[in-house]
Length: 168
Image: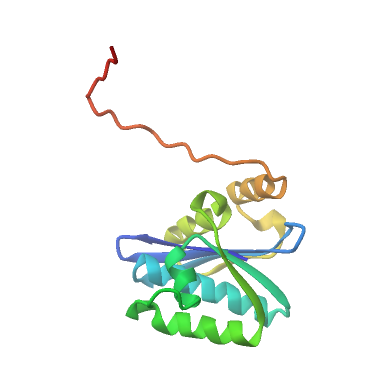
């Protein structure tokens, strides 16, 4: 399970992708979460995905989040900010009762969940995708890149600094 949160202004949302051990998509979610912060979006999306996995009978759950803060708060390595305390405590309770592994990954390795989370700002209600044909095309493309283990890159446009450096 990969999860990600997104915050634009006060609007938050999340994205969750659940795959089997072969990388095949079992479920994808786009979650509009309302007002909050990037940390509440990360923790709420993670909790939503974790509950779905447990409620659907998945025994060994390996999770990945690009939020180092969330992972370290869950593992009790860092103190938990008060805004996400309830979510983190619920995640800890679920971890104690089930076989769950939590990993941190970099944003570049979390493209699918990141794209789902960014799409949450354009929907009014939770979108659930259970069939590959219903998943938005740009998400399907990212899923295939992940499944085939191709490297993916984020292209960033360079801002002009108007400073010129000519080495001797």
